[in-house]
Amino acid sequence: MKIRKVLAVWTAKAACAICQYMGRQGVTWAGKLALMIYPPILQELAMEVRKKIFIVCGTNGKTTTNNLLCSALEAEGEKVVCNRTGSNMINGVAAAFALAADLGGRLDADYACIEVDEASTRHVFPHFHPDYMALTNLFRDQLDRYGEIDITMEILKEVMDSAPKMEVIVNGDDALSTFLAMECKNPWVTYGISEQVAKSDDREIREGRFCRKCGARLSYRFYHYSQLGDYTCPQCGFSRPSIDYDAKEVQVGDQISFRVGENHLVANYRGFYNVYNILAAYAAGKHAGLSLAHFNQMLKDFHPENGRMESFRIRDTAIVLNLAKNPAGFNQNISAVMTDDRMKDLIIVINDNDQDGTDVSWLWDVDFDKFSGDCIHSITVSGIRCQDMRLRLKYADIPSILEADVESAIWGRVVDGCGNLYVLVNYTALFSTRNILKRLEGEKS
Image (cartoon, one colour):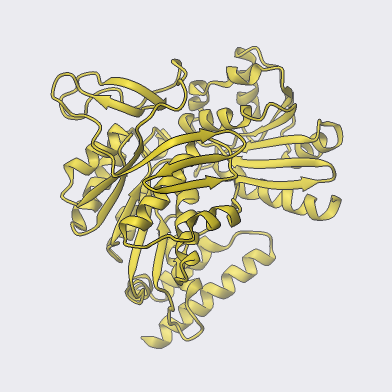
C-alpha cells in the first residue's frame, strides 16, 4: 500500500506540472488522480499534520481568509499545507496534501489551512475532522447549484454535527451563520464589527431578514452590508451575540485599519469586506493559541493572488482583477472600485459554465446603478453572457462596449483607456482571464 501512496503523490505532481506547462491550473486533476490511485491518501496525509487543521467555509471571502491565515501561521515559523489556488472541492483538497508531500509520500507540516466549498464538506469530512472551522458568511450563491441558503445550512449542520469537537470561529454579524453555530453542538467563538462604519444602501439585497428560530422579521440597529450588522428578533429574543474578536476604530479607504483588543492592524487593501477577511484570519489564529506577533508584518508583505484584488501592469495601465460571483460579493466589489475616485475603465466578464451556475438572473440583484458616476471612463462587457450583462446595464441607463473575447476587451482598454482598469469576473472566467493578464504583462510591458 505504501507503493501506491508514493505513486499517487508522484502522479499528482506530474499531472500538475504537465497541466501548468499547458497553461492550465492542474490542481483538480492532480487530486482526482491521487484519489483514484490511492483512495486513503487524503485521510493518511491529514493524519501526518503535527498540530491542527483549519478549514474555512462560507459563501464569500474563503480564499482570501484562508490564504491570510496560512500566511499568518507561516510568519510565526510554522509549516503549513494550504490550497492557495482556491481549488476547494474534494479533488482540490486532496491535491493540496498530495502536492505538499515529498517524493517518499511523507508530509512535513505543522498545520493545514484548507478552504472547503460548502457543498463539498460532505465529501471532505469523511477523510478527516478539522480542529477549527472559520465560517465567513452565508449568502445566496449559484441557485442552480446550491439551491436556497437553507440547503447550504443543512449541509453545514450535518458536517458540523459529525465533528462535535471542531471549534467554530463564526461571523457574529451574520444572523444566518450565528444561528447555525447556535444550533450545532460545537464550541464556538465570534468575530464582528460592533460600530457602524458607513451607512448601508437601503436597496441592497438582504438574505437573512427573518429570524431562523421563529420566522419574525429581524430588527437591525444598523447594517454593514447585505444582512451583516447588529440584529435582534423582537419576538423570540434571538440576537447578535457578544463579540469575542471585535474590530473597533475601523477605517476604510486606500488602506484598511482597525483595532482588535490591544492590536492595531493595517493593510494596504481596498474594500470593506476585507475587514472581515482579515478579522476572521486573525480570530482563527488567536483562538488556536498563536501569538500572531508578526501579523502586521504579514499584512504588509501579503500580496493578493488568484484574482482577489490582484494587481497587474500592462504598458502604462494599472489593472486590478477581482472575483465577483453573487449579488453580495458584486455589490462589495462595486463599493471597493468606487472608493477609487480616479477616472477608471471597467471590464465585466460573465460566464455561465457549470461551476458558475447557468442561471444569471442574479445580475438583476446587483446595484450596477453605482457605476453611473463621473469617474467611470468606460464599461466593457465580455464573456459568454456578455449580452445579458449589456442588457442589465441598459436598464440601469449605463452605456457599455460589447466585446465577447476577453483578451480583445483587455487589450482595447490598454490601448484606448485611461490607464486605470478594473476587471471583474465570475468564477470560470477567473483563471483564464488571469492567464491572459499575466501573459500580456510579460509580452507587452
